[in-house]
Image (cartoon, rainbow over all chains, first blue to last red; front, side, top):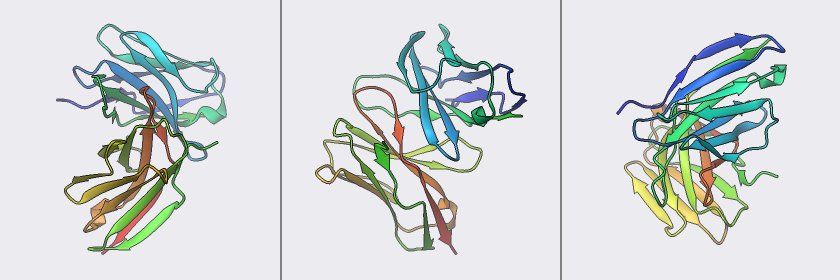
Length: 114
Length: 111
């Protein structure tokens, strides 16, 4: 099976702009989670989508939003970009079977806000 | 308040020796623990996991130990290889599907 894919891999934006990142999960995986990685804060959970519904949300402002499509692909959007939004944005997918399961990560999108 | 902590930011080990990476957690609701390996500018790669009903899980050179009473887990890599050099993250889950990560430990394996 192909792994989790994310596009674009690199992105440069300026303050005040908005950005949309895309994630395609592993085939058959229905849960998609997003994480932000920064040098100062480490890996932090943004939100999780399952069956087109946001099921869980981390402690991020409303400028960060997402959605999931019927084919399980997901997008996240950041509006009114700030310098501090520069980070590696990671998407992870899992099958969401009952019991314990593992999340598999994509390569990430590196966002630089100038 | 960090619920998952990796107190050693870096670790240097000689090739062929054992690498031991440690992780502590505070949330007693965590019931599933994972270790990921990460190279710069790449996503984390899953290594090994353990559920709270076990105290050990082994996969090749990698073994994870869980001490629930101490809220502590560790990853042992034996023997260590130069290709193991990376940042290692421990992560924990409760009944939901959200991973809480530690801050990572940079492992350097010297030839």
